[in-house]
Length: 232
Ligand SMILES: [Zn+2]
Image (tube, rainbow, N blue to C red; front, top):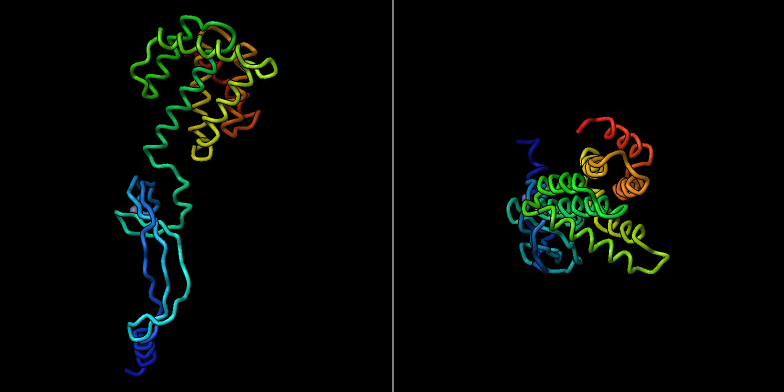
């Protein structure tokens, strides 16, 4: 019995004195739970700590949180857990990124060839745009080129494309594994190669894609060369 005496007394004290936190829900939503690993509902909560004597709250001990609590596993996380996109949101970002890259590559150097359009339709269907057709895609590219032509001279098609690519790829890049970044670049490369070797415009666009995906210039260059050597 002797060795337990200290422990028992401490447990006794913590029943008498302690800090109790009352949580208040201040918002909710959906997030990717790092605890149970999936898209879950969360509650955003702030807590008020109180010093407790004999189970009765006496002194306020300040605020705590905000925290994010998973509705499924009930684990609590810092609000930085919300920075990670849900699986659902992430796949949407990925689809949009592929779409932007495809359009950017097609819009370089005049109306795209039949073979480029065919290849692009294949890439887009693979990315989840099942209803895409060559006619629809050709119209989109034409609208894009016309739009860019209306931009002030100092901007032009190249600049507006670069902005679009960065807007679509920058938020995605940090959540992608290296293989995911390569895959997006290579899908663009495939379309560029569909009607022959890369043009200088296509190289520029693919370079911008690589940069927006935070890939270094050498890596992009090597991947593009490797893609050109691989028969499709
Ligand atoms: Zn969870």
